[in-house]
Amino acid sequence: MDSFLAAYDPLDPTGNITIKWDVVSWTADGYVASVTMSNFQMYRSIVSPGWTLGWQWAKKEVIWSMVGAQTTEQGDCSKFKGNVPHCCLRKPVVVDLLPGVPYNQQFSNCCKAGVVSAWGQDPSSSVSAFQVSVGVAGTSNKTVKLPMNFTLLGPGLGYTCGPAKIVPSTVYLTSDHRRKTQALMTWNVTCTYSQFLAAKNPKCCVSFSSFYNQTITPCPKCACGCQNKNNCVVSDSKQAHKKGINTPRKDNAPLLQCTHHMCPIRVHWHVKLNYKDYWRVKIAVTNFNYRMNYTQWTLVAQHPNLNAVTQVFSFDYKPLVPYEAINDTGMFYGMKFYNDLLMEAGPQGNVQSEVLLRKNKDTFTFKHGWAFPRKVYFNGDECLLPPPDAYPFLPNSAKVNSITISTMVVSALLFLFIIS
Image 1 (cartoon, rainbow, N blue to C red):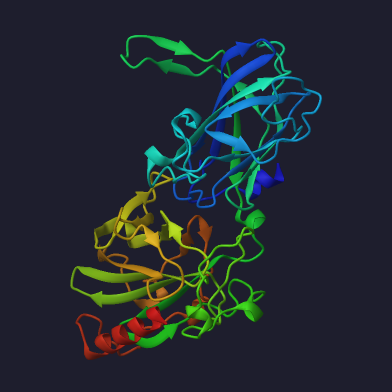
Image 2 (tube, helix red, strand yellow; image 1 turned 60 degrees about the horizontal axis):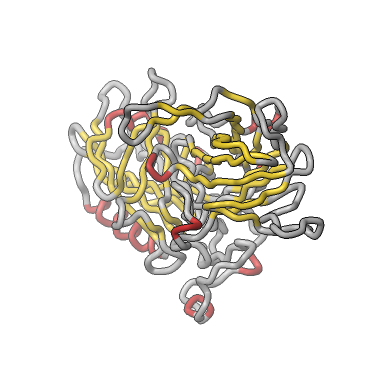
């Protein structure tokens, strides 16, 4: 129960991954089931190298065959003569197949190397599925024993799965929409994410700047922990240009650029311009990990003026309204085939956009850090913000109703900061 409480996300209170098992037929010694993994999280996807699903059989079940996925180990199947099962382990571990597998090994929504989009970003790609034939098992609704102790890596730690629960059987509509069929039996498993379980330290940090103050507020020192400080790469060094530096490792260990914050990701929020009825923000996301690029990345920000977004110039944008009365949270993500891929650390390892917001004259101010976000998430993990007393402050004599030379100076400094 405690792990589910820790997994509660106030910006996505109903977000979860639901794993549905539909028994589609009975066999001589078991059943065939269609297993569907649906990502109902608004802004947290499963990135490469993809999901890993595990469970424990209630009895001595085996997996005769699979379509659209495979177990990582077969186990000891020596007691079987003739047909040998796909897996005889009491605790099988299943992964998705890679794209391009032969057609006879494919299943609907399979074979994406385990990559699953967030539901809020791309609902059509937020599902992964496979078919499994189970033997030495029950052969009716009364004799089937549900699998137990489900685990999900997505791709790392962080997910906690509840017990399998029998639910009303899934109803299917035929292609001509004239007939309904249904699964013989259905059970669901719900998995929720907790950043506290995923990692001891944050995975990203936030820096600030503004046109009305030449000070750039950097990410806090060692924001993501400094455990990789002795194994980092200095920017523009020979090692940074070494062949193979971008090759991922099997354990997904990062290779970070040497920075004072030692984070794989930095989000920079720059208050750029002030108009009579509008104001403009520039957002830049920089990757400092040489071994990882981010496909279908998401960036979530919480700010009271996101209820009046007028235009987002280079990102796609979607408001997130988990509570109907409050519209202060939005999701930014890359435009397909344009900047939905955040490259590895280096000259191409950043994406940026500007956002135009309409002022609410009753609440708008540049004082006391109001123009900066309250929360920032990258790929579903909350980023560490600078302490409030370090925010760029508004000088007492500042006039912020026009574009000034200081604006241009800060913008030039910001450009150098982003690419460094």
